Length: 268
Image 1: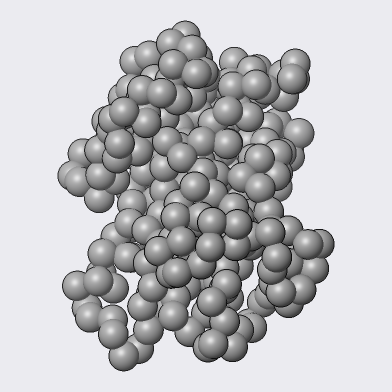
Image 2: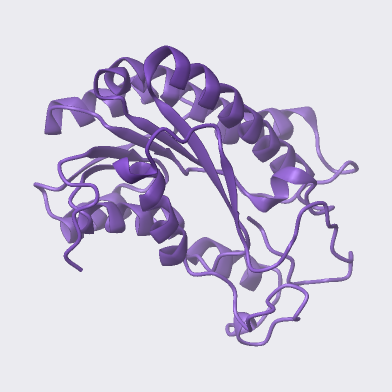
């Protein structure tokens, strides 16, 4: 791939050691950008940096909810590459929970990771993004609109992220020239999603034969397909568009609650 839509841009991608985040980081580098990789696993972060190249990537391993993590990511981007053009808030906590088994500590943790940590990174990055009229891309979920019965806290956290996107998409564009947009992936076949489904008792090839209600095309989405869509919002070609939320799914999932007896319900 020899594309240059992100030539010379510097982009922080949280949760980029695996899955959608890693696919976005790879695509950003392929499009000419330099990236800051982030995650919780030092070995995986090192593997991604090695794959992308030391001159194209740097890594920071830390829990996003820790005090100072957001500032450290910004400092690493500027220190390593001289500037910061965009952030991708991809890192997320994905765990099941409903009205009956969710305690406040779990709910607070979900909001800390999925909503407040993205806010903190936007806040920390804003002085640098303002300099270059940069952009923010939040990775949400189709569950943001209503959500599945057993993903209640997760769905609420992504709904709050969507409101944050729309609010800051207006405010920061007016005040700072910084765009804020969001994509809401549907069901994506990431490493972690495959692991979760195996832990739920499904076979290794569970994704090969899925109900049409969840996969009209015969398969679910690939991380690379989310990454391809992400590039548009990070590139200058999206112009002044801000405060927008785009759903990336193969069927209208908004507001639907799948049957409780389904074992293949999507997580994102």
